[in-house]
Image (cartoon, rainbow, N blue to C red; front, side, top):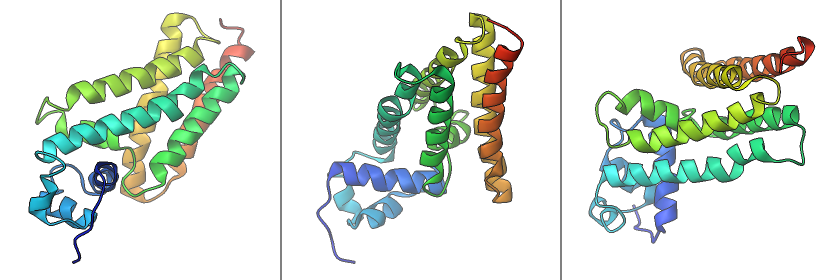
Length: 193
């Protein structure tokens, strides 16, 4: 295999794809180096080890979602319902665009009981995700109920990925989006605010 010159960003992107597909523990340094077109020893020029790389990947995913997806919840040029639908639809599209599903959910399941070193990054990501959803539901519900609706939507989304992986059927993701919108609309029809 020819050795390529790659950027740190390219290494992070390739690692993201492998971690999504194979998981953290099943992805070796040799796998990562091969995916980047590097010799295993050359890989350490970019990162001190797999843990450092995973932290960088988690940070990159968080930055992307913060700038491109969570921000939709706060876009005052759209109605709250439009924001919710756009945010969830984009999240589903992004996670579905490559094999493996939701990296943050995958890593939380795989590593949370084994190591604490990734937990703060994942917790921050999910807290910001929950805040964005809560912000949207707060247009229709009081603060406590908005948080409950947001938690339910987030838990359903992550659970849908489990079913997608088990059944190879993506309809579970569309169902999550539809239920989130129904809950949002139900508040208006019941005059709950």
